[in-house]
Length: 183
Image (tube, rainbow, N blue to C red):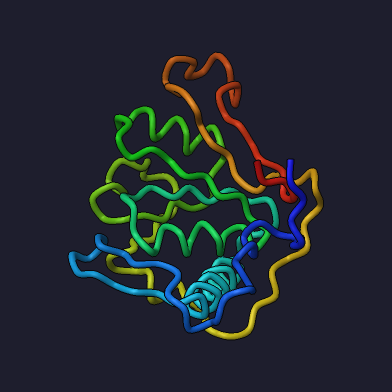
């Protein structure tokens, strides 16, 4: 286990490189290549964190992310943790029944993703689309990531078929990572 000099894993973005350096090239998402600098990642992940808090989400609430790989996925993943929330990446290749189980098992308060995969999420949970709603989620402005306690979860990862134990072994197949460790 390596200690990181941050109190929040969502803030573990390099400060040793120039802010204008390229941090991410997104070759997917909306069908065109998009480039993001370190400054963009810090600004946008903070805007996601502010936007989630503005929606009323509270420390420890779970946010499921259901999307193909794209810049918004990473930005949301980081912003969720910066806001003191728990990121729950969901494998979009699972059948809708299993996605529903994961979303319910982790007690997600919100599902964020692309239009193609959001259709897999259960209707009883609020949804935000990367393709339509994402700009409205962003709340631009300064943001200081919440200082987290080491025992607080940063993310939940479901590591095997959740449907295999649906209704019988709640959370037995979820793994959580504490806030201050990176392996």
